[in-house]
Length: 254
Image 1 (cartoon, rainbow, N blue to C red):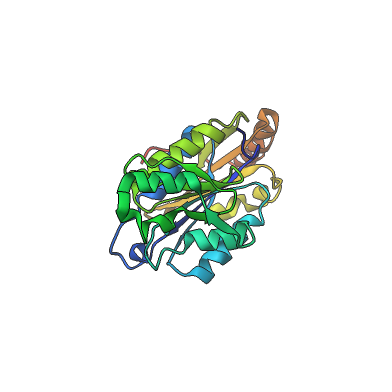
Image 2 (cartoon, rainbow, N blue to C red):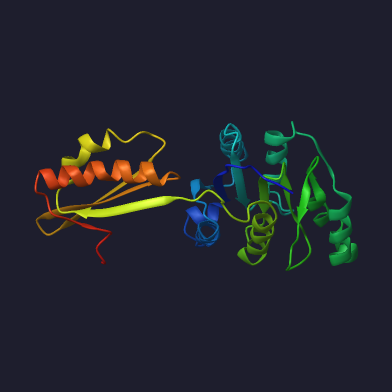
């Protein structure tokens, strides 16, 4: 029961009703919170309309990342605009689909004869799909390759599925991260030459702020190496001290 060792997390939130303002998204905040608690962050999040061709483009884009882990929300129901199961098959299983016998049994158990002719189609999944438990109505979500997870658009159903997936495959990031932060009372432009010296494998965050006619910047350096974190953070401290630019360690409270 293992997932990708160095995962890049993506979320794909499908729902035209989110984009036209009829509903508000609750998926991003929940997933982000759960990932942060485990020491992970998202690489990207997409909110897209119910458009099969565009959905396929997004799935194929994510699939190009060998470290991708995707949580997809919405579109796995039985109505004509529920495209996710078919598009997932096109992207991840060469279009091959089959009725999942366990999913069929769960749907029949939940709905009896009313499972036919439409609800039963929710058990028609990409070949090789494994199931995620639905704590609300027993109609399962599914996942592929232990890293592509497909859940309903209803948060009451999807949240438990996300937790099931994370608790099974991505419990905690064991790679320790070191971070140092300062607030410099200068414009961001003053620090660009220092920024260019930071290699790409070191995380650099620069957040400029304007308070009236005064500028400041919150700068943060992070990596899995404490030595390198200290080394590249010192570049900025040395620069600020040399040019007599005031700064404090950490970030000012708002």
